[in-house]
Length: 516
Image (cartoon, rainbow, N blue to C red; front, side, top):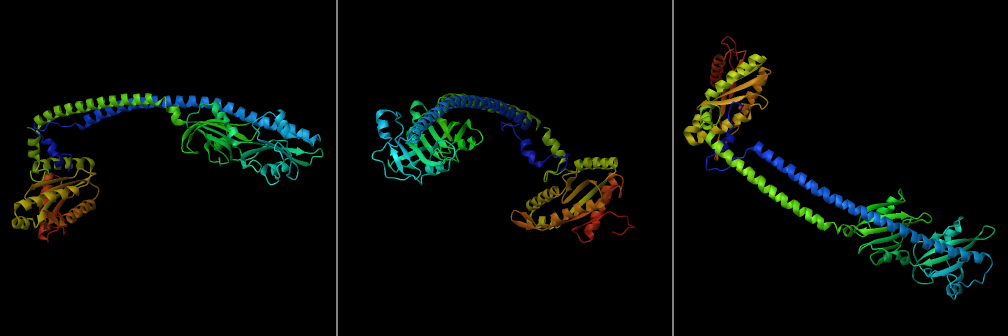
């Protein structure tokens, strides 16, 4: 239906009585809702930004603290390794100077070697046999298959080799061997000095740092194997570390801070790590994210509670304002209903809601004026239902009225949405249509054929199937007339020609001298 008529789907709102208390103005409701959303968005954005800022500050403070701890941890590990290297270098010097009767056990007892961290110090010859050791009697084991022995035999540099944790053949406990190559004066391989320490010693720093219940300390080799990892009081070692976030990051950034999302044990942590400058190891310090956030959460709850309270108050105010305006609008609309009902009844068919003859003639004059101004074609149609009388007589007027209503709905569904086409009912089973802005006569014929097809589909009238058709007559401006009276009269005449020709068809008006 075109813009000259009132959509029947809106009638219940238009018929609202004074007893119906509220009528919502959609644009106004949208504005109120938009204002509510804007205020709420601003409120919650402020809360979220505040919470985010405080979390960021807590994370930054934790990273700064962890970074300081990581530096201290790195220095402790470096001192431990340096001490091991110095002891190994001292033993190696004595051994190379020809003192084959070294008594390392006695040295340890006398305090020559003072470090208590080294559980075993041994001199191993070029065949892997222990030739001197702090263990007495000398252990009858061979280290030629150990990775530290193999690595030092191939090594031409004088560097401390820090092995992965192994089960000691002498102590029967897990140890981290650290070794220095013994190179004879002629440059040949003369064995190694090996010092073993327990993995737990590397992370003993934990006692000096308050990292919380889920804190982490780790010494990881750049070969991707952990030398020692302590979480709370639990120690592990020898596990893979290549997938950990800090190991991956350390490949391109030797030192840094990050948030780890539980790669190790599912606990989210704030991590600081540093790669040792002199040894292929990485020192890692981590505190649980939840522990860091613990001081922040009470304030977060306070912010959220206040925001929720303000939101509730604002929501209640918005609802109150909307309902008040809706009630006021309902009263205004009820007073305007003397006029809307009468205007609608004067211009529309009461049964189908379609424009009546008066409104149709207004629309037709406007369509004709538009066609003249834009020099386009306009079609004027008369429709008469074939078989309606039989349905009405056999099943009664109630079913007949229902059939007319469904016919009106189908006709409305087949007018073109992109144009100002109009469907009207003149009375009985007689309908009229205006097809505006037709590019060609064939376009009009295509619309008419669709209408005939739609009306030929059976109707379901409360369980009663009815079959009807339509006879349609059409006149085309300016081909079949220049004024509205002529065009409508010729469309009416063409409709009778179609009905006499066998019904369920249409005809354009023609001069008597021109065949159809």
